[in-house]
Amino acid sequence: MTNSVNLQLGSIMNKICKLFNIKYPIVQGGMVWCSGWKLASAVSNQGGLGLLGAGSMHPETFREHVQKMQSATDKPWGVNLPLLYPELDKIIDIIIKEKVKIVFTSAGSPKKWTQTLKSHGITVVHVVSSSLFAKKCEDAGVDAIVAEGFEAGGHNGREETTTLTLIPQVRRSTSLPVIAAGGIGSGQAWLAAHSLGADGVQIGSLFAVSKESSAHSNFKETVFKAKEGDTKLSLKSLAPVRLLNNHFYQTVQGMERAGATPESLREILGKGRAKQGMFLGELEEGELEIGQVSSMIEKEKSVSDIFTMLLSEYNEARDKIVNEEQYRF
Image (cartoon, rainbow, N blue to C red; front, side):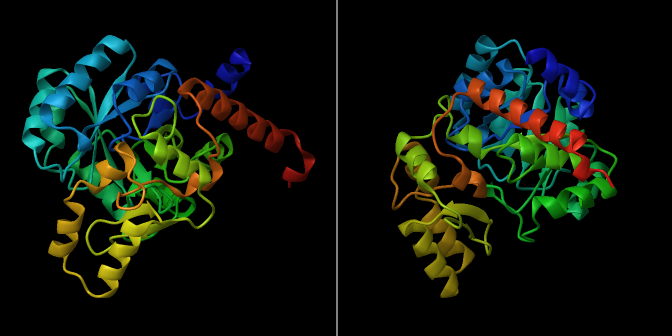
């Protein structure tokens, strides 16, 4: 199977493989409280691009994870950095001093840090939710774009544009390599993203509940039980995020319906809600971020098994379309 996989993948989405020097155009989402060095190194060692989730790490914890990554893999890897992070300057300093080679930025303007990072030889990728911001990324000088649709977990776009709609719009708006994100939980979805013009895919939810993820087992089990419609986009008046429906989500919804100010929403979020939910396993008062594909994930898998599944599904779906007469018009 390995030779077949390599033959079929050899000529597709190669912009991303060449940009990052990776075997497969699969990027792991840099998810808060899930994406430590164990998960990121496992993804890189399988031939994808693993990302450390800097958004949930204090500077010294981040430095520790960077150094453990350097020992755990000799493959390419990077860092996901939300630009709203409160100690951003310190994290940037560590990235430069530790010679991190790839940085994905999100939740802010790409103009602020792109040129600083690139001046140190760092490849920069920015996450967007619209074709307008994709063009702004190109103007800012980033090397690639993650186009993230409405289905995604974590922080999301206010536009509620689905991945199926977003990817072709972003593809038309920029000549940069495009990585599709949001709702990519299978090889079939990966193939669909490719057909829409994506050069690679970023996968979050599948890896968030993998064996190597640092997420709490309570959180993982809740994801495995999730059904269609159990995740909702919330906090649109502040910073949209997709959450599993629990007491915390209902509290936030009630506050927003009552006209809560951004300050009051920040106050309730500032109590370590994401850490409580995803890292400590507090299922009612914690913030449980996950994508819509959670309803398709039934059990914990290793990163190795996830790659095997994705590659097998991609090839099977591709062969079916190529070989079946009813797909020829």
